[in-house]
View 1: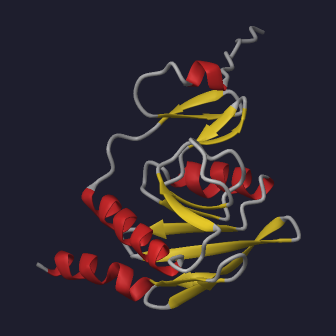
View 2: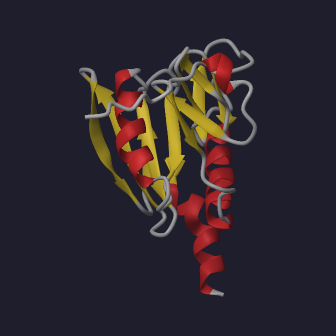
Length: 182
């Protein structure tokens, strides 16, 4: 039986690559082509909703598509991160909240691989947003494991912790739903 060697890479390798990549446990993963318009619109509207919710919080801030250097063999680029503490060049500690906008090409990675990674790294809240349904699934870390807070379509979600964050999913999705009806 032939054993094939699978090369493993580090953050130093990652910094040299062209294009958009993530590195998980030393294995490079190419990012999907540029996101479609629905993804970009939701990204913008969710980031704005988070910014508004954190306006009075001096400890936490919102970053869009910023590298999180988990360790020397793992670098991910969440769609949106809420980070608390000092502003640095890259994210170097677990964000408070991570939002991933799920597409058919990213579903396995977002729902399984990143879910396990974010849970292991103790990200307090993980939000998966599905553009086609304009639905969000929110998970909160409890006793080291993600517990589902709920599914949100037209409701307001409240993420309580360092800074309370309110996200009105009806408002976030309102314009997208209107544009689809045209």
